[in-house]
Every structure is written in structure tokens, then in C-alpha cells.
Image 1 (cartoon, rainbow, N blue to C red):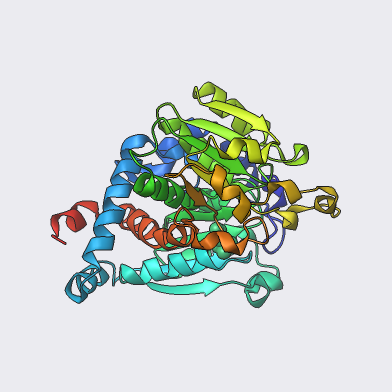
Image 2 (tube, rainbow, N blue to C red):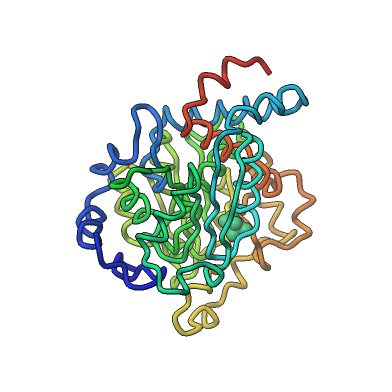
Length: 362
Ligand code: CP
């Protein structure tokens, strides 16, 4: 979906041409816009992270996790942003991204408000996209956005840039494009549970790689690690899009595309399962795709390496048999909880609290 299809309220007219010019820039040319010195001004794309930034985020996530184990530490952390407010604008369904962001805000002491059903907002009265975004920013210090449109969050950040309240924007899932904070928690999870970390490991991405925004963001982040190999396992209809493959090639990441799920399993250090993203179907086309051979069942577990981990961004349907949950390599429930710490760490960094937090002993 392109910028001109921004659907909030009436058609977004003013500033649209400027946004389209901005949007067409390579992400490398947007880094100054996305940054505030060493900190992130906005979190919109996987590509805006470099390795030192990821390492800082992992360290701060671990530290927050440790600090909040005691009431004293938890109270201290909750005092740090008690003068700030965050808005969650989630116009697409969400359980864990919404709840983990909301609770991460509360861990940092931020008050939260939300719009989850835009039909209850004044966009139903014809308010323009620009006016709605400016209105959100009038009341809060951070806006966290999930939206069906690929460029909605970026467009919001660009609109606010030229106003007197350029509050930070976080992309919490954008159409079929990206889900960068999911990739952050996935990287944190792999770094935490894989013996020796992520460098040199084989990551198997399984399912709807064509429209899965989590796998797109995660694949892009893998360019930051040495010697990572990607096994892209999907039915032919759900292959990874050429833009991500081109970025992997440019970044020197080895990848193989295959439909041999069972064969790839024995090579993977991380088995990352995903569901069919049929909410993006145009005419029910997913129903014609046979995914029966892309389901992880108990009989597959003997093929999985003893020290491998099994991940899923969740929610799942039937691509992981629930009997797999009891296997110690099944890490998706821990992965889900890790989102609390990585999202809290991300927001703490965006508000310049990294040093203050690290100076506080856990
Ligand atoms: N992983 C993820 O984005 O889950 P939700 O859709 O429940 O937020």
C-alpha cells in the first residue's frame, strides 16, 4: 500500500507529496531523521539498528529484568518516566504486542491511553490523517502504532517532524512490511538461549515468508551477525520477497530457499515457525496453498538438534502441534515474555535513560 492510500479519516492531502518524496529515500538516507545522537528518535525499521545498538538493547533488557525482580528496584524503575504518557494506536488486532508494550510502559512508570477501534475516534467525522496524528501528539509523549498499512507509522513520524510536538513513533507491526520490535525480542531470545550466541548459527524461517512482517524484519537484522545462514522454508506461493533477498545478498548473508521442511530441520539452530497471514489475502488465495507439510509435530523432534530452540512470534494456529510445547527446546512462551523487557529497554533508551538505569545496581 502506498502513501496516498493512508486511510485514516479523509484523504491525506497536505504534505502528502513531501511524504512520498521522503518515503522514496533509501533507509540509509533516513538515519538522521530516525536518530537523536546515539539514541533512536523513532523505531520504524529493522535496518535502523546496528550491532552496537542491538548489544546495548540486549544489555539493558537484561538489566531491567534483573532490576525489577525486587519491589525496591521495580519502584525505582517505575519512577523514571512517571511524568510521561504513551498512546497505543492499534487499529489491527493484537494481543502480545499490545499487552507487552502497555505493560512495558507501566514498568517504566508511563501512563497509557489507547485507540484500538478507529470507529470510535473522530476520524469517523472525516478528520484528516495529519490532524488526527497531531491530535494524538497533543496529549502524549510517545505513540506506538500497529496498522494494516505498510507506511502509516513512518508517515505519522514525518507529519510530526514538522510540528511543535515531534513525539517519537514506534512501529508495532506495519502491514506486510515490518515488525521491528518483534525482531528485537527474537534477537534477544536467540542471543539468550543459543549456546555461543547468534554468530555462525543457522536460522530456519518457516511458513508465510511472503507476507510475514516478523520474518522480514528478523531476516534483515541477521545481516548484523557474522556467518549466519538462513533456511527459508515455505510453499512456493509464500517465498520471501525479492527486496529482502536482495538485502541479504548485499549484506553477504547466505540463504537457501526450499520447501523441504523435514529435511531442513536437522540443520537448524533456531526453528522459527509462522502462521499463514491470510488477513492479507485479496481473494482467499491462501486456501489454495497446502501447508500440511510445514507443521512441526512431535515426530519431527528427533530431527531437531539437541541445543536448538523453537520459536514462533505467535499467535499460532496449527503450525506447531501443542504437544511440542513440553519439549525443552520450545522457547516461544519465553520468547513472548522477553518482549516485555526488550520493549521496556527500547523505550527507556528512546527517553535517554540507559546510563541512569545501568548505574543502578540490580
Ligand atoms: N507477535 C505478535 O505481533 O503478536 P500479536 O499480533 O498478538 O501482537
